[in-house]
Image 1 (cartoon, chains in turn blue, orange):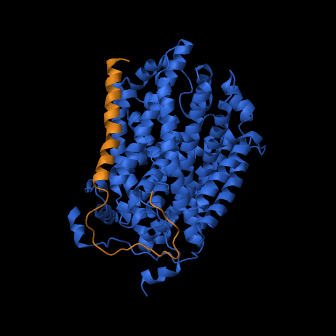
Image 2 (cartoon, rainbow over the protein chains, first blue to last red):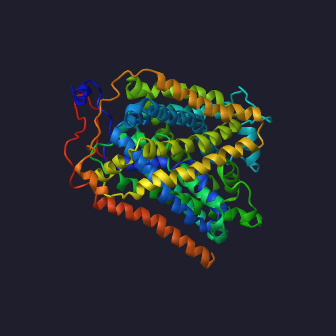
Image 3 (cartoon, each protein chain N blue to C red):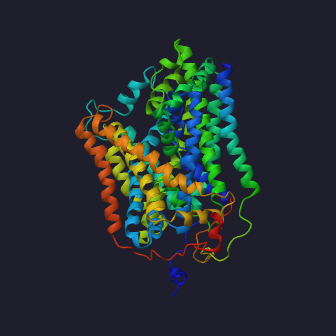
Length: 524
Length: 55
């Protein structure tokens, strides 16, 4: 009996309806909170206009190659990360499946706190209408809204003002995922992404007409060419590209698996990658034009402003600016609305990684998978991140999971594929057979040498830094639980999920196009 | 704005937004490959499949 015949008892795989739906969904995943609050600050602190060079080099030599690696694995082996990587691994499938579950577990943990931040953005969208933070945005955020505990330690005290929007985000996300890939995920992205572009575009246009905007843009774009000789600047560029593109933790493997077999991969991939960078550049212009206005109002240079990236930028500095800006309430609603939309579409992709993996291993429908994973995740999310210690907990967990977990996942996946399993040429053949933008063997060199070298350095330096210096002055015990503990939890979940038996035939798909084939010589 | 900052802004816009425009135009002109090895049909079973609509 052929594998094809066995498949007939299983439900057919969900599919994106077409290229547009896939591209908008993939952009929706890549464009997230980091595009708005991370890129502008990173670029400014690492050479300003000169940062463009390492940024583009990192995009071409690492970001796009890993994106294509994710696409190739997901599309060829037609499954979520554990399923696809198990099929990629062949006789070593049990081991490679565990890498897939490691990626799924990372996504599972990231979703827990990412949801909380979207809940904050949703709250601030409402607060914008009456500029509720008054003249003390920092005090309002930490005291009135988050009610952050004075000591950095885990508490079980739920904060209602945080928990209510968090519940709304979880309900919306579970509802969308339960509708399935086409009717839920894709449809939301097709509506939301143009809306996000319009909303954020309006914020940027308003910012450009503020007094002092030109000073902000001068600060952002004036190049510091000496920065190019600093290895730290190049690592920052690779880090920004890597964390921004939603790569190496299962998202793009999962999304690519929902494309029809005859689907162009590299052409849409370039659109997704450049759209992500385009949004980052737009965010940089908007954020620094606004910061220029703030510096102008205070009579200081932009270089003396504090909290110009991350949570501080969005929830402290930006509200302070809105209080001084003509029409601040409307701009605030647009800004926090955009932040909510950007975060929500990224959240959907993160949750889909977990939902798809559970569906495939345990034979669940999309609805059952979304509800099961969503319910468990929501309960954990409430317990850990809607409390008075939620701010500290998400800060520590985010740092460990990203700088160690996701980077390790990328290094292992690239080394495993190219050097251990030696499936690189097969994946290159796959990409070139179905795609309109053909890749040369340089792609193998980038994935097999540049990516492990650069990200391996980032991984080691990240581990050494947190091991020797800690993080943000947080107590060691707290970091052991919410930092290292989160990583240990990721490993344990991955091991347990790998060990559990499959409820359906995991080998019911034959890779297509066939390899080796006559066409395989084309790449040589 | 200073001439240097304007130059870097313009260069960034050309490379990044230009890259988006160029890749989009290329995709519109070449949406799919013109020939493939054959076989490898999708698992199309309308009686079981989820409802899909082209967007």
